[in-house]
Length: 332
Image (cartoon, rainbow, N blue to C red; front, side, top):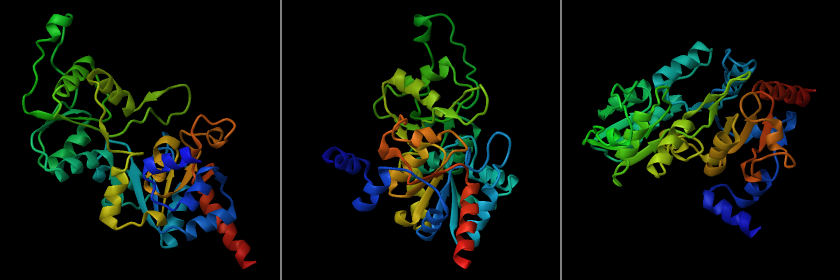
């Protein structure tokens, strides 16, 4: 018990101990009664997107209906994604393309958070981006100069002696790593070299290991890029996305959210549910993305019970169906 209490304190959980103790020891499979209890106790829903609202094919069946039903009940809906390849404006448009009635103010994505973080600390200097154009657009909105987007055009041939002549930009005093399909040896070399200066800020949008994908293909996530730079530089970054606090902090400050009246819905235990646990939110895991039912079974899970969600179900569409069933039972 003492070990468990110390871990709760270390994670900075803000809900009461009694509620947190009962909710972390087991994950309950959603049913009609639990669905009603959850919705009645929550004013704000935060949704992960990939693997929850849509997949590589399109909108996941039932998800759109659930979002509409929650809004009909007067619940506020927010979209919280670790994806750094879109700006908030682009992500709002993506939601609209799938049928989700989202506004830019309802979206928090890591490209935006990275730029906002630097603005809030009154950053001066230049950012070396191991990232993508969306991250650059968000930095541009705050007038923060940057370099590094796209394939590195500088040829680094030969071996060790030639590498020592690599040119570095003396104005760079921040390295930000996000999803970068052009990750290369020259980029890792430069990012790590900039980080050799101890006062250089090291930011990472997220550390997701892989992206949701069906079939035999594994799509490496941003964590692949981040860990390459971490290993070479021997530095740990400030992680902006889930499960770290900055993502919820941005929404909480902008919309005056009460953590105890919020629920995080996601498909990953270590990121989505991890955020909920760190910030004192209720949590619902859907099994339409990365995590599986075995992951929330004590006898088979590789995850600590403290990472278990309060509730789990197959898809987000289950929530709407169960709420409808609960309403019909009350009326009969």
